Image 1 (spheres, rainbow, N blue to C red):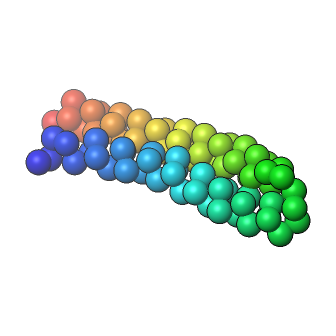
Image 2 (cartoon, rainbow, N blue to C red; image 1 turned 180 degrees about the vertical axis):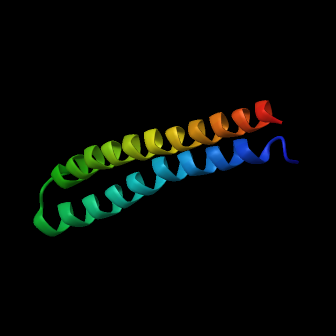
Length: 79
């Protein structure tokens, strides 16, 4: 069980960074487009912004796990 737990943690964090901003962008974009009769303008703008947020979150998550792996490897070498 310990072998796949870190991989599942990484997968779930990255998936969250992909799914959450996109879902929020679609909901908010559709609402704003209907409210202001904008023909998908807000949907496209918010989806683009959600993509940038997702990219930032993924990079941040990967860097965090890279540092943890380096730290764990160094700890194992010291023992």
